[in-house]
Amino acid sequence: MLQAQPSLLPALTEKQNFALKKLTIMGYLEGTSFLLLLGIAMPLKYMLGMPEAVSYVGPVHGILFIAYIMVLIITASKIKMPLWALPAGVLGSFLPFGPFIFDHLLKKRLGK
Image (cartoon, rainbow, N blue to C red):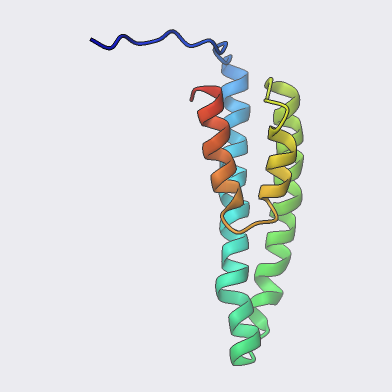
């Protein structure tokens, strides 16, 4: 019979959980804006000659990207993230679907 193994990871405090939740929300917003930019706005610009979508989605994505990096740094200081987490979070923000994958891997590592 299988028995549950006790977690070797320390439980996160309420403030740490809140910081992690903010990071998740910012990651999803930033990742979604990047996918909108790559999947909708840029094809509209370069395939259909409609640059307006990029002029709206681009700056919004830029602001969300900067906010995500700031929240990532703040969260890393509040939570004892693994050593790989901060560089992986930054790298993930440059890749399509990166923030979503990073969030999954971080939560899996933290036992969430």
